[in-house]
Length: 266
Length: 332
Image 1 (cartoon, chains in turn blue, green):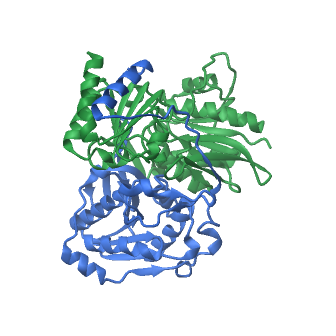
Image 2 (cartoon, rainbow over the protein chains, first blue to last red):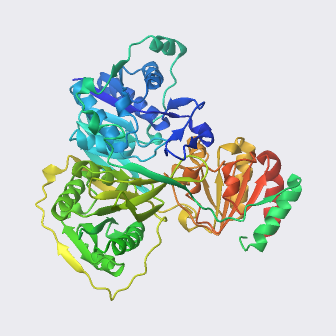
Image 3 (cartoon, rainbow over the protein chains, first blue to last red):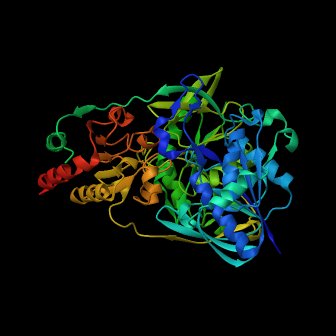
C-alpha cells in the first residue's frame, strides 16, 4: 500500500537578510522589497522527510503552499527536490491571514486533495515563528499531531514512534496514521536538487487554487477571517547607555574591558 | 463581566514549570484590572500538592483534573480536557507557557474552541480597543525597535503563549486561600490517537543558559572558524554560557537549545556579549533584561548599537584577538 504524503511549505524572506526588513509603522505590516525569498529552512527538512518516507513505503508527495503568485518559486524548488505534485493556494482574499486563517484554508485544500496519510510541516517559520499552524491544521483535519519531531522509528507502515524534543530531553510518542508532524532540523539533511531537476521543475505545472476552488467564503479567510488583529505598533524603549568606544582595535579592547569592570560586569 | 482569567499550569513529573508561576503572576495583574477572578487549570496524576502551590502563587481557584492517563502530556487528552473546561466555564483569557509542550497544546486548544492565539508575547496588558477591554499582546516586529500590538477582538477566550523568563515570578504566600475545584472527566485510552510513551529529561551539560552570569552570543557576522574559536575562548575565560542567533544556530555554531530570542531563550545575565549580530528585535527580546550589554558588529548602523551599553564598531577578525587577550588579563 502506498502512502499519500502532504508537505506544507512557506516562502519566507531570506533569513540572512532579515536585518534589511522594516516594518510599516502605520499598517504594522512588514516591508520586504528587494529581499530574496527562500523556502523556510525547516520546511526543507519536512520535504526531505516526506521524500524519505515515500522512498521507504512508496506513495505520492504533494507540496502545498499558501502565498502570493511568487510563492510558485518555492513549490518549483520542492518539485526539483523530488515531490510529485504541487499546489499553490493563491487568492488576494487569503492575504493578511493570522495562523488560524492560514491553517483553515490549508485544511480545506488538503481535504480537496482527497485521502491523506501523513502531513509534514516545518516546526516553525523564520518569519512569524509561532509554530502554531501545524497543530491548528491537525485540529481542523481532526487528526493527531506531534510537534518538534527529531526522529521517526517506523514500526510499520502506519504505526510510528516519533521522538519529540522538549527542554533538556525528549518524549517518545506512538502515532497511528493519519497524523501530522512538525519537524526540527536534526531529523535529516535536505538534499540539494540537481541542475537538471531544477530545469525540469521550472517547466512543471503548479496548480493554483483560489477561494472559489476550495469553496471558502471570503469572510473566514485572510485578514478579515483572522481572529487576531494588529491594533497598533509602538517603539520599544530600550534604556541603555549606548556608549560607543572608538579607536584602534587594541585600544577599544582595552577600553571596553576597563568599562565592563567599572560597571561591575566582570 | 465575571469571566475569569485562566492560566494552564504545566507540570512535568509532578514539578510545576517555572513559567507557569510567571504567567500566573501576570494573570493576577490582568484579572485585577478587569475586576475578575484568577484560576489555574492543572492536569496530572496526584498533583493536588501543586494546586496548593498555585494558590500560594496567587490563583484564586484551581480547576484540577486528575487521572493516571494525564500523568504525562498527552496531546489528544490535554486538548480535549482543556477545551471542554473552556466550554464549561467560558474564561475571558487563557495564558499558556510557551514551552515545547505548551506550544504543542495551545494552538490545538485554540483551534478546537475556535479562537485566536498570539505567540511570543513580550508584554500583556488590558487596553480599551473600540470600547472593549481587550487583552493586548506586545510582540516584536521586524528590525529596529518596533513592537506590534495584537488583540483578539471577537472570539473568546483571548489566548496567548509566553516564554519562560518574560514575566516576573510572583511572590509565594502559603497563607493565601483558594478553592480547588475537581472537574470530572471520563477519559479513555482509546481517545489517545498520539500516545506519549515516555518522557526523558537529561541533566544539563555545562552552565544552564538561563542561570549563567555571563553569556557570549554570536551572530551571522562571526563568519570564520578563527573568529568562532576566539569567541569560544572568550566564553571559556569568562565562564560564560555559549549562545547565538538563529543564523548562528542554522550554521551549526550554536546548539538549537542555546538560541537567544523570541523563538529561543530569554536570558538576564549580569553581562551579555553579542558578537556579530545586527540586533533584529526577534533576537533582542531575548536579552533585553540583561544588566550590561556589550555589542560588537561591523555595521555602524546596526540596531544592536541602540540596545547596548557598550558598543564597538569593528571587524571581528581584528578585534577578537586583542579582546580575548584583555579578558585573559582581566580574569587572571
